[in-house]
Image (cartoon, rainbow, N blue to C red):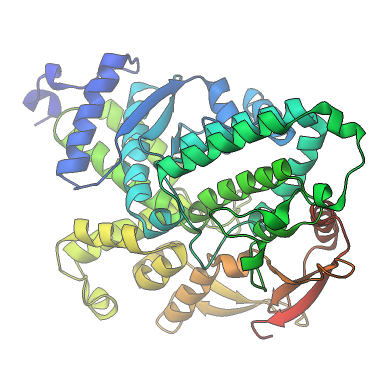
Length: 506
């Protein structure tokens, strides 16, 4: 019996591609019912914004944030993405979602109604649940205060441009952006104040900078204390320079606190950039999990909408076409291959967890004795979403079935060897090595260079000594290294050296 024979057309949420806000609201309510009462998701309150393609491009260029200070690099990204989009070389994302409270989801007005429903499920409930519950986001980000902070950052940098000139501000931002990857705390939680205390401190800084500025000071000779910006006497919520210990992993933090040449407004800009870098740090560690969670959620919800007779077969087919494109994984010898698709791997692993819970094989019982046959796949998934990052999630949950489905194999590459060597394939002998090798690819400690401040001669010639902890002898790219060192020297004001320390074995 067909769907149209069992469900009257009046039960449909929508019947064609056109949408209006009443239809969006009706569909949102149906999606929310499934997300909260079937899947049991725990989400921030949602704020849905519908924007044009040009506004979506604008959001692209500013790290996907609705409020951001101005910088030439954002305009460069906008021009590139706009050109690629207009010429048909690339498409735009259907949505952008902000890790904030309320959680803000931007939907493109060009989307069909089916796509609006899909991305509402994907962003407003999938990503939203992950942002609110994953331990990395709970530890390192402040969803309550990020929008207020970005508003402060935008206004502060605009006022700095008015007071000190656009070129001066741009130079500091250029250097700070070049060091964003080395501007995060990786192993210790940064100090956090209450929202009220942060708002009060930011207001005082703006007032102080406004009252202190006088153009006549540019004509006077500067003493050493003025050149230092009074930094030696400054204390804030992070602790002053006297509290710093070496080695220090967060180079932006060290420069902000101890640079002999930076002025207070320049230090504040460094603080702004490193706080934004810290905000994005968990997203870099959870790409597979975050996108996998959102993709699994939208797939489940859209199928439930169809099973309940709320969308048509045509809408289901449109959704499946888009979903299949999202989770498509080209093979290694395909010209479209650019690595493992995080949507594909994340969705496959999370679907596999459900399969293991509901219909396990003897192999599953050997590999996952606690999950196999438990039936409670919802709790299993929510536990994984809350307590793992990509590296540990793959180590814990990647199954032999998924390895076989993706046809994974491992290559061993040595600098001295004349050729690659296949060391493991998707068979009984290779499963363990494949899982470990794939997980290692998502370890930021192996991906991003580990550069630390080792010594700063503040009482002598003020040389700053950095060290690159070269994992397994992997060197830095010479051109990039020279460019970044110039930015560090600009912020430090004196000589900077970089040593190499071999770590991680051969």
